[in-house]
Length: 224
Picture (spheres, rainbow, N blue to C red):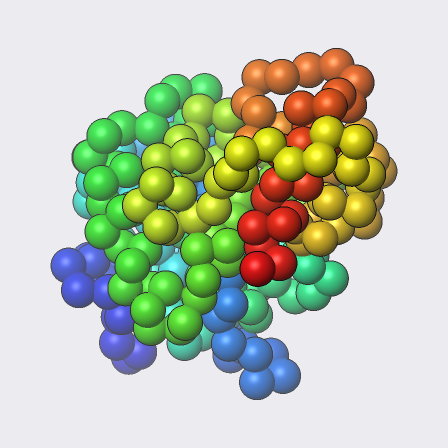
């Protein structure tokens, strides 16, 4: 049996795994929500052969962490999509599922458990904070998780993700900035919606100067 990688996680192996393809190794961490009623139903589904889905970790609302797939192996969590021009995100990433119905705030114990789990993952695989992304970032045509209630700014303050600094060029081309950040080449409205979901949650309407300034600031930060 493949040994788990994270100290303190309960080992609950899923059969839905396989080798990472083409010698790839983790360079991303993709965060999801389960959109189910409770952690145990989600754990059952992530370990059911017929479901053909899995993740490396599941974090319950109470902070309990389960590991289902060794970090060295490929879990089936991301599906179709890309980031920074690269596809097969499953072979390039660690997947973390958060027990959340998609509408509720993320529990304090759950956020604390995530903040305790991430540093070890990033250190083991030399993943920079910019490599911690949303499922909606890499699949804006299909996904919205972990959604507008997830506190990305909190992770960034701890050095576990990124957040735009002072506003950049308010006249910068938004499409170019989003490409530089990593968003896939999908319809402009879907890319804007994915960016806002993470960096301007709840904002609607046409592209505006704040979108351009924040995206330009983040693109500049990531190019340093």
